[in-house]
Length: 305
Image 1 (cartoon, rainbow, N blue to C red):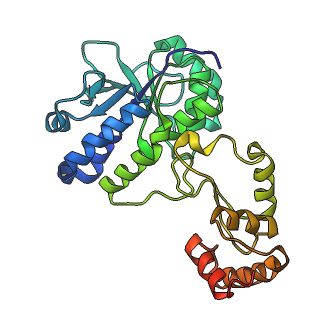
Image 2: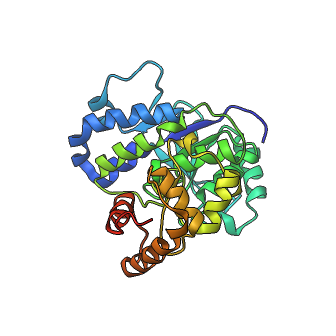
């Protein structure tokens, strides 16, 4: 994909206020941290309601804030794709946002995007909903078609394209440099979970805590020889580390690597005995062992290995 300037608008705060109502104002200190981090990871505009804007002022000079105050929907004379929901964001400009397109993946989306650009220009803002889990794919297709503006939310809250997935896809899939610091992803996740009081699924792309956990022997062997075999990008690029999980699918090589990682001295000829016990315990627990459990097992074996 060619290098060009994209504008990413994040409406996480708008969605948070719509979900939590006035209670979100109890989290003003955390919201200040959140918008600072959203800006640092690559948001060009952070959208919020007039009420939150007043509560969160002042803002850093380098941060662009957009006040969300949808004036009206523009429906007439649009026959490109069903009934497009188009928001006029500013009565004094041609700042339009197309919202929805949930089922666009079932149609000739490339043709539709080109028709939208032909009718409105490539500066129209695209806000694709995620009902069919295709918001990121369609957002990337919009960019490939020449679109320049995308609306997101962190973790996809509210059913929109997820900010972190868009940024990560642009960086590692499309090789487009947007300029954000993705090492901060875990920090954004932490403050976001504090605000929402909900934990994000550990396998969530780009921000999940467990996305670089590896257990089965063949995977660990492959990563030991060449991480690119199984990892699409370096974990450190998004502030994470690879973690070897010892479980019922682990082999000798995995166990060796884990023991070395934990600085545990062992004897090669007894590893199979420990591995047998590990598999039995993991089958009973229906999960892998964490580091502390592995250390305890080592001690319970009387350091026999």
